[in-house]
Image (cartoon, rainbow, N blue to C red; front, side):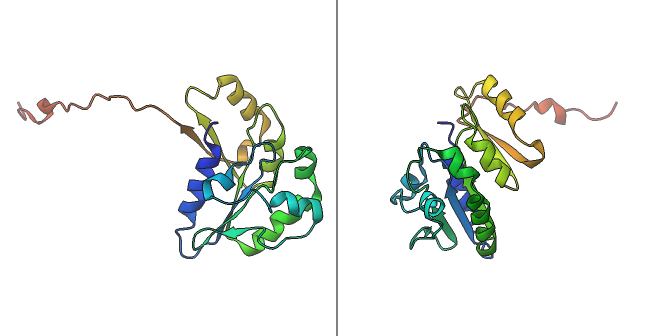
Length: 179
């Protein structure tokens, strides 16, 4: 509940505003899929269907906006680690690279499971999402030790409560000039 899926959806929608870019958002969280909720679609067919059958079923990915496509998780898997480590998953990413300019993979949380490490291993880069008051420092430490830092594009610190900053300007700066 750090907001990673919502950030993924917003990032995909933002990238799809570029008229020269085709974007696909893929839900790779077989334990708690959520992308379908944000776009009002069914959870299947999706990625799981492709990985289990090696067939891209009709409507496996859907156009949601002009240049934004989504692929749902396709359901819940009893063996998500095995599904993500299949050679088919790498072939799938290669297939998408031929059809889309930007591929956003919505991965499961980094801890306590290893699914996210597998997904980030398939990606060219990734954004880490941490939620203020929810993500523990220990979880962040574990995450930073478990991924390739060269692939880290950035960190989103989500749900930060606004605070009042000292906004009064000291007008004495414009005061008397010279000696």
